Image (cartoon, rainbow, N blue to C red):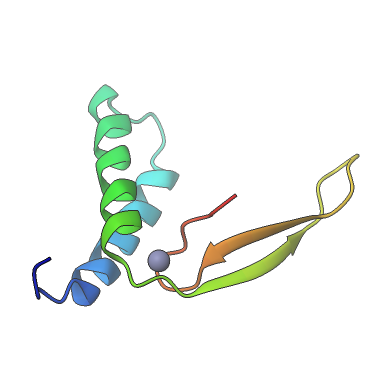
Length: 75
Ligand SMILES: [Zn+2]
């Protein structure tokens, strides 16, 4: 295991991820890049898992665990 501190990178990747999700008409490569970014976040973030209650239309509300640092969902 290396000692590199990924936490600054996590902030950058979180922002990249946020931008990738709102791109209109994404280029075909974007899905691949988005997958790499999400993998990076899931692997290197020191997650702080919190739980959010989400109300889904026509369904019961659902508890969604997510990381408050990298914003990835864990369900
Ligand atoms: Zn995280």
